[in-house]
Amino acid sequence: MIHFLLLLNRQGKARLAKWYSPYTQKEKARIIRDVANLTLNRPQKLCNFIEWKNYKLVFKRYASLYFIACVDMKDNELLTLEIIHLFVEILDRYFGNVCELDLIFNFHKAYFILDELIMSGELQETSEKVVLRIVTQQDIIQDTIGEGTFSKVDI
Image 1 (spheres, helix red, strand yellow):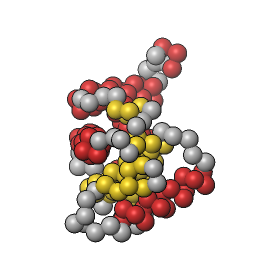
Image 2 (image 1 turned 90 degrees about the vertical axis):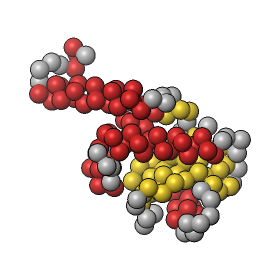
Image 3 (image 1 turned 60 degrees about the vertical axis):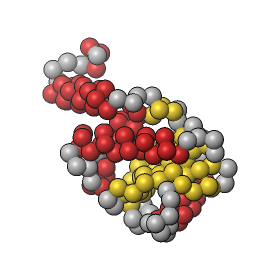
């Protein structure tokens, strides 16, 4: 099970944080700080898996962003890396060569894509095409509501 997924920039600022286990605000801030210190300062030549407390941190750097997932000790690290890669591919297709600014200004879309991909800490959809189709349909619905062609009641 994935306990949380973080997207951090090189300075350690969280650009996206999705929590699948309950934590207080203080715990979340401490976790982000601790995880950032562990992953950002790690030499490039070392592996992308770190044992942390009773969990494993699986991370991958894409351009200026670190994608970090916290999973149970018994979970497969390579599968978690594939989930991270799938998320990055979907973001890349949706935004067209995704960058940090896309995530800052369209964070709600990034969360929506993540929610279509992972639910309650488990992978729900493995098809990139299905996730993109659903997100595109959601965009169409939002645009038609914004134009006033039909009300929320009609949906």
